[in-house]
Image 1 (cartoon, rainbow, N blue to C red):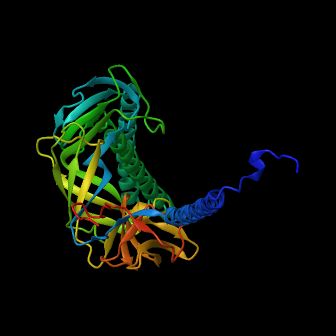
Image 2: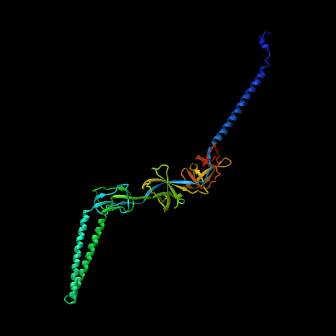
Image 3: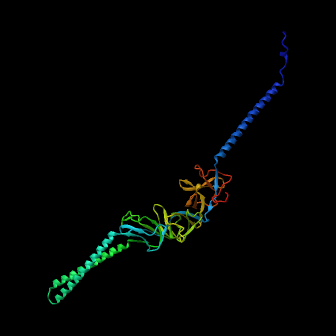
Length: 394
């Protein structure tokens, strides 16, 4: 037999088979662990995606509406009496006696007008009156003579009646001439510009030598006199508050020239009607102004103390949602789901609103709700939510 290499006569090594078995088991184990790890990661991602799809919201608790409120509105201050003094007769301003800021009494002379034309008309009217009086006296004498002659049958009744009628005409002429003189004398009295009431001169729009034209529609007047001892304050109150702002209510005035200081005024009357364009009711307040601290025509902020609102709750305006069925808010129920509640707003206070119905103080209302929020959607409440009423925690 031929000789073969010795290596060909060796038996196979016994360790190879177990090694292959162990390697296969390790490979299967690695594949299994990988599949399990991937499944766990996939489940974790699905759970995280579901959790991230739940919106986190901030909730507020409705505040009670039993607390006192205030309402601040712009007001216009006016004098109790204010008049622009116009000239009644034409001429030239002869002199003025008072300037702005001067206190005046009723009937006090403010200025005097020089009226040469009116003076000449008065003199002419007086001359006409004197002539008419003379004519009347002559007609009276004549009528008396003819009446005496008629008694002797020296003249006819016709002639005597004519003389009597002439006397009546002359008497009427005297009355007309006297009325003309009285009219011109009344106009002469308007040469003196006087104060119609006691007050203060707030404007002077003329000077010595100025041409005065009476009855001109564009005439700005000579003076303005205002009685500032008592003031009227006019305020436009929105319709939603008109039932609470009634006569007897006190308003607190604040003006820019007195920071930190307020003046009290009593509401005395209202217009009793809502303006078609403004949607508000005009109210009038009055107050004494003995030291003339306030000035007519100035701007003021008027604050009213409103009575408490019973049976209503307040919410931030940011919690409101506009839905097809009307105004609504979203509340979080005990299961952590959003529930839509449709509400009725009683008053809009700007940053907050008063809810008349549809909401209770125990509801947890979502503030700044997302537009995509739907009824029944799961939500997550933020770790710390604020209340509608300061000092309460949701």
